[in-house]
Image 1 (cartoon, rainbow, N blue to C red):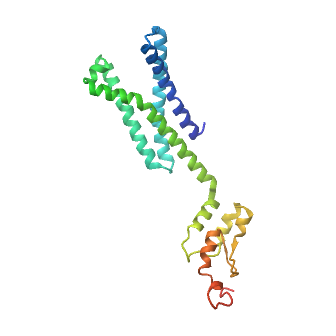
Image 2: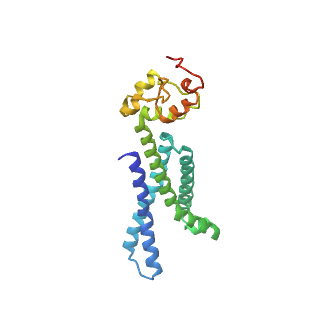
Length: 223
């Protein structure tokens, strides 16, 4: 399993959390009795899904922030939000279990009950969205790595300011060996000064300073 597919699998596991809850809520709203064994089974599935999404999602986001460069700040912010949501969701449950009280008794007020319920509803979706974003960041980094030195060479040459473009250096020509044949030969100056460039943009920018395009110029001084 790749790092990218792991994030998508964790995101899809959020279905394990919400589906059993929705089933119980809909059945209760329709006043349909649910056998105790069925309700227990659905809650177990929801609990396993919660552990997988929240804990696994937190670990996956932390790993992605440490390893991936694209969108690192955004991913770090998502990881902090997910960590806070996970802690806020689980903490009242732990306190209720230790003090032998119910969750409403631990929360103590209607406003906190609404806040905790909202957190319980969106924590898994927030974690799933963060994992999808992290998966996309892994894909972006893989695509950048697949471009290799040749892609970086072309991008860097196209970004040269006017007047700074020049012939292909020896190291650049060697790195361009993996590029298509037309790109390896370079683009010759259309004015005939004898120079060649790695991109059409660099050649066009050179024309403004080409000795052959200057008024009254005869031969290229380089020749």
